[in-house]
Image (tube, rainbow, N blue to C red; front, side, top):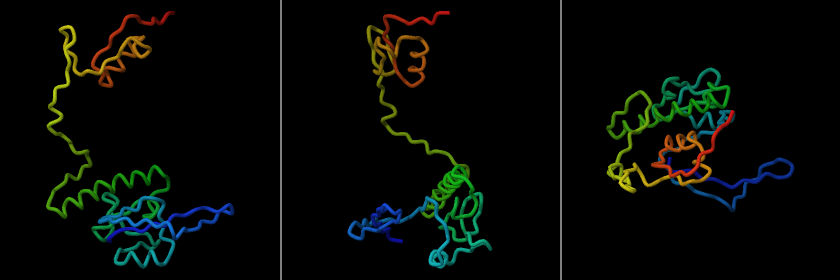
Length: 179
């Protein structure tokens, strides 16, 4: 695989789709992930999948834990694998496959990745930068504060702002909830 070639399409008033051969986009790629309602309903597609083993229903044989086919570099899920009946299930197949695609690609470069999916812990020197500020002898965790305005008219609003990372609030009046 060296890339993909796309042709712009337009739908006619009758509902037919026409390809505009004058508007072609070529995209170089080392890996291609097809992730949209793919079906194996054309003989050319099935022939192109050789040597992937197919089930008696014409869908790829896959490991339901990793979404890997009989060829270790090909993953399938959702519609094309015949496993999912809903969008939610297809999305989950994609999430499951993406982790194992990541594991597979990393293994090609000698890296071991845990079998349990988890986000990488990104960390850089910028995380150590102290952005705290001192105002009138009081130190705040960051310079982002709420001024006396509608977002600071109740303690509940200020609490939610603090939960979202705001450093301080400057108030002069509060709205009271009355019985």
